Amino acid sequence: MKQIQNTGLALFLVGLTLFTSLIFFGKYEVSLELLEEIVNNKGIKSELFINDIKANVVGKEFTNPFSFSSKITSAIETANETHKQNSEWDKVIWDKPHSFTYQIAKKAGSGFIKENKWLYWWLTFGLGILGALMYIIPNVVIKGPPGIKNNGIWLNASTNRGWIGWFAFMFLVGFYLLLYFRPDYIVNWTYIVDPISESLSGNLASQWFLYGFLYCTVMSVMAVRMYIKYRHNKYQILRTTSVLFFQIVFAFLIPEILVRFEKPWYDFKNAFPLDYDFFFSWNIDQLIASGGFGLFILVWGIVLTLVIVPVMVYFFGKRWYCSWVCGCGGLAETLGDPYRQLSDKSLKAWKFERWIVHGVLVFALVMTGFTLYSYFTGSEAVLVIKTQTIQDIYGFLIGSIFAGVIGTGFYPIFGNRVWCRFGCPLAAYLGIIQRFKSRFRITTNGGQCISCGNCSTYCEQGIDVRAYAQKGENIVRASCVGCGICSAVCPRGVLKLENGPEKGRINPTDILLGNDVDLMDLLNQK
Image (cartoon, rainbow, N blue to C red; front, side):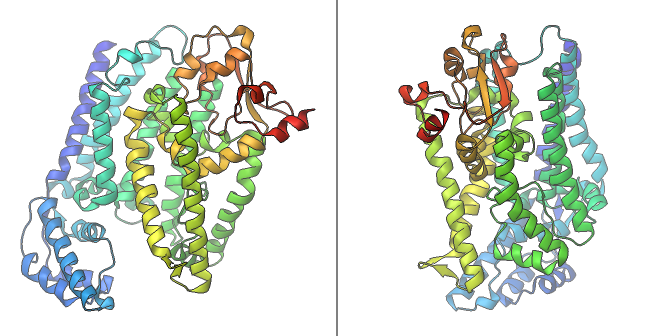
């Protein structure tokens, strides 16, 4: 079995290495015909940009995306700077330079990779999937109870911030930086998923299709690992199946198929304020222009946030979304599962968590208020603050850096729920409802607790579960996502996830211990 695992690891590394190396190859050449097509399709009026491209790009062959991108982005930035100084706003190219360059590179690219897309898919994704499964599946024959035990995790270089963990950290962060800020460097990656994109939406793959496909692939492979590890725990099997279903069907397949039928791309499970640009003017205009279907999406999005979310949290806690539906939570529970023990359990981290996650929620609400005011009044600014500036800041800091680069890239260093715990505005909204108006709690039996610490060690949300278990107190925390791992790893069955009457959720002793307690809850219990 060890030989099979080693072979699988070798295949995975070969696929990963080849996939990474693809960004350094390719040929890019812009013809006059392609330039005219781009100018007409984009409505470009900048003679400076057009002349610069004709002089420095057209008819020349570039052998890597870096030099090609440098020429295009330089032409855009130089032309824009001049037009802005001369107040020639109709000639400014407002697209982000690297996003615009990606669109040109996608059409200008040529070479062996673009001509052999399926071959490279098998050599990258194919080998990666096969190798990962060969490494994971032999664990089925391992004897003993399933679930997480200590098993040397603190001595493993991949699970205890060792060199493998730091390598994974650097790779993930690098991937997200390229995805969000340098898509023109990863055109070759998108070529190998073009056939899949065309079969679903009818369009060539963008960097976001690549990300969606890679997201679903990684979740599916790591879900196999979850099935093996928790093969005797029905709750974990069902929960893993649920997040996998909602990610693949609702967040990937349905939106892409909608595009094929000329409908708006939309993830029906993505609720505001996690879907922070739902109320942006471009999105509202697009939905209204789509007729009845677009209006249905608009109404659905509002009802989901204001009605469905709080009602479901009342009956089932925030776990119904964060651990059963959400794609961010799904990736955290599959790809991020080996790193859950790295979540900071300190009081300092908890205090920071409360300020930062609720701060992001307030930021999202204020930005949305500004956005709606601007949309209905036609004003570009509120209190002398430009609405577009607020949106750009949020999109960059929260939507890209926090949710992407930090949220996933930092798994191997700070644990798998960095985004969910510290940055997700929807998690903050759900947590407020769960903390004060929900039937969900984790009950404990202090008489059975042996203080092994498994529950606290593997709580991805940084909760000291053992402290509650030792006192036999219910766990009612805004941050708890109800993943149930604390219960799964408890050797004595001390912990149990329940949905019961609100009365009795809060323990009167909490007020004496200085815990965060709503006094009205205590009074209502009398």
